[in-house]
Amino acid sequence: MPFVHKVKTNYHSSEIGRSLELPALITSSGLVISHLRYLAQNYYKSESWKERSVYSLKLLITFINTYESRYEQVTKLLREFTRCIVTGTIDYESFTDKSGLYWQGRTITDANNILHHITHYTDFLALQEGYEISRINPFRKATTYEQRLNWCAYYHKQANVFLNHLSSKSDAYLANQKVRQINSLIAPHVEQEKAIQFPLKYLDQLLEHGFKVKEKVDYKSQAITMLLNYGGLRKSEVFHLYVSDITLHPTYKNEALVRVYHPEYGASPDPSFNNRNEYLQQSSSYKPRTQYRISERLYAGWKAPLLTSKQNFFEIIFSPAEKAQEFLIVWANYLKYQRVEPPKSSFHPFAFTNNKGEPETIKNYQRLHKNAVERIGLVCKKDYGTTEHGHRHAYGYRLRKQGLTQVEIQKAMHHKSPMSCLVYIQPSSDDVRDYLKEAHDVF
Image 1: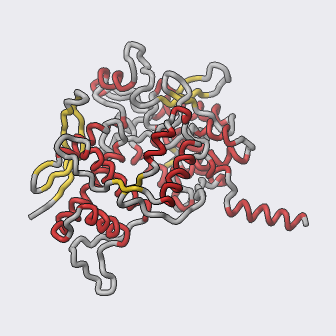
Image 2: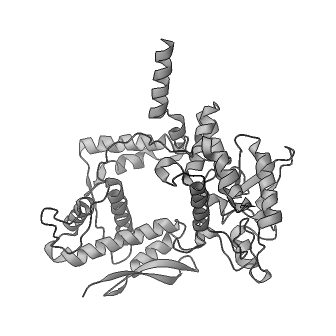
């Protein structure tokens, strides 16, 4: 009976000369080796990207096992697959599913992401010797309308690409004459969605009372939350910090200087090593946290922020500025009263540790933050801005209220694209209501 399961593998790639821990798919015919080679070739991609690629292919193989005999052309099969992941396979009038898949419908964005992963993989497959006809979603000549859309997309992309003057317009001309047989579905247009910020009126209460249990202060969670709300960090970035990354500012008295280094290519605290990847691998039993599987507790992502030094780091800009002093006090208290040093047999340089001296995890901080929010009488929910996600949003909105320009906000939030911070610059519906109310009162 046909089946498909996801498994963990240790794959040695002769092309890049190293062994990799990769997710893989095993079917009744064995491992899907071509997809392992594909993931190995894209080893630099994030763990979430690899997992999503495996998941997308697993869905397709499951669908093929169910429907293959009904379709003579693979393109028709892919078109039906795309329809099924959008609409689902369940007949809600009879509450039956003849396919036995019982898939619920997905959003168009999710469906397009799945289609992209499958197309990208089979494009890779088509370039391999003996697989020349394996492109499941081939190109066809674009209609005049489709060519116009392609050119619009091209110019929009070029407007936001650094070094766009190096792009070849002749290559773009050829590319824009083609479209996929099965193109991405058109999703409803949504303006920059409002980013819900942590409510300012409860922030001091959270820091002072939320992270206190039986009069014992959790300085670690206070420090992490301050880095998110006053420093604008993404939560994953906090867990790449080393103790040596947080120091006294050489220029501003009694302020903290916090540098966030690239987890793999950032400068090593020990200059005898080329980078942090080499430093961790050779001086400890740990590795950069981006290299762990996404299902492993030590995994922490990296969203490729804008770095501002050749040593591959950026510096935190505290807002309000005086919070750099307050953070330094909390950090010192954490080091003095709470931080558990790693055992000598299991050294690591990470800034935040658990009660065993091991690197702290994102999941545990989320638990501590949720408990603190509920301790001050709030509901911990993303829609209310009361999860850890809300702190970076609060930082962005605060910069806008302080009158910073789009470029300045981009710099402070370490965005590569100036468009990324528009969500903080554009007025929300609440802002527009307030403006109208003020105008009405004046009138």
